[in-house]
Amino acid sequence: MNGFWEAWRLIITLDADLYEIIFLSLQVTVTAVIIASVIGLPMGAWLAVNRFKFRRYVIAVLNAFMGLPPVVVGLFVYMALSRAGPLGGFGLLFSPAAMIIAQVIIITPLIASISHQTIRDLWAEYHDLLISMNATRGQRIKALLWDGKRALLTATLAGFGRAIGEVGAIMIVGGNIEHATRVLTTAIALETGKGNFAFAMGLGLVLIVLAVLVNVLIHIIGKTERASTW
Amino acid sequence: MKPVFALIVALLASATHAETLRMAVTTSFYNSGLSEVLLPEIKADIGLDVELIVVGTGQAIRLGEAGDVDAILVHARAAEERFIAAGFGSYRREIMYNDFIFVGPLSDPAGVANAQTAVEALQAIATTEAPFVSRGDDSGTNKKELALWALAGSPPEGAWYRAAGAGMGATLNVASGMNAYTFTDRASWLNFGNKGDLKLLFAGDPSLFNQYAFIPVSPARWPHVRNDLALALEGWLTSEKAKGLIDGYTINGAHLFSFNAVTP
Image (cartoon, rainbow over all chains, first blue to last red):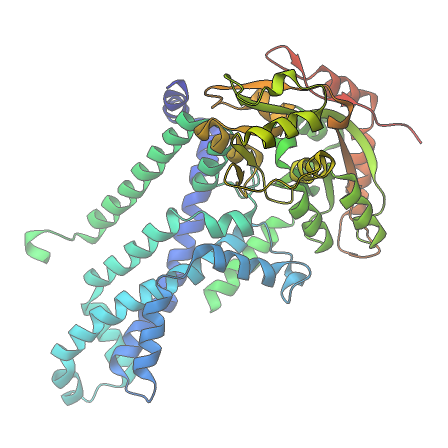
């Protein structure tokens, strides 16, 4: 179990390489979660307050996309960003930007779906009030997002959870390059490949602790689960 | 979409800094640990950051074809020559070699340790139908293994032959878990941390020679590739300094690679 303790020794001694990997994991995932929330939360609210012809099908597709296989998303993004692909000119392949793009595609449907379900229930409650106040569509969406913010935090955290633990897509589009695109999950895959199971396990626990810390931090900042602010 | 765009621009700006060369290398080369010795020296000597994309030879060649890397370092001569003939690579420059080996269970049910040649070793495994794990991923090691099976006369088929479809390390993990035979390069084996009951059983046949070659991606085919950096790297990799580091690299006292680049 030497490798296992080695992983923890690196944490305690503030090993630069390990912290670089942890920092990049957080940077990529947090950026992806912010972008996906900016897109997904209003999209969910918009779907809840609007009635249009194919609404049910759009929602069904959105729900199905919650389970998009990351490796397929990775392949899709790879094909698009490759020099031989349509967006090759940007030279984004094997960069953190490519990893963020893949993660946004993976978690936006998840955030939008949960947001939609939350807002739909809230909309049923607020419907008469907002209509009688003659609120515009935009105002309705804003009011619903604001009043549902605690429940919507769950949508965002679900997105964070899926993105921070994702390996299939970012391995393909990021390339697991040391000092450039190596994150915790791809480092775990690499160490497993080298047969260094104990070290990989140590990194795995670091990842889990990190996810828990971020969630706790968000709850503290959001002041959820307190008597006065249920 | 504005924040997305701003972010992409910001990341793009930070990604295109200084002198960075992107090279696709094989898992066997990376798992040997030699790159951890060479890269800091390259950085110190010629100020070049080499970013490694670690994949099988088949995928490395496809990354070169798509222009997604500036150079490749691989070990499958026939595929390399096709890559160059198709205009994707400028030329191939041999850098170093090591060898492939057979590893398998300590008990050695097929008697591979007693084989005289690599082909005989495979025939012994096929006859006894002892479990054998193949890379199955179109990598250089996989191509070499399949070429040897072709020489052995019978295509490997049956429940005893398992294609893992994975990199060298993952394949060794499968072999270790199943206590099966497998075909690997020596470097990956020496560096592998989960040997279990596996043991090196056969090595030394000249047909197990494993040549690594450096190929710059053709700037005529892909104008954006950093051919200047690829040439600088090639110069370093074929230098006396590289020769000393490559020949001097050992794991637990075992010598791994032999430098054989020739000065044109």
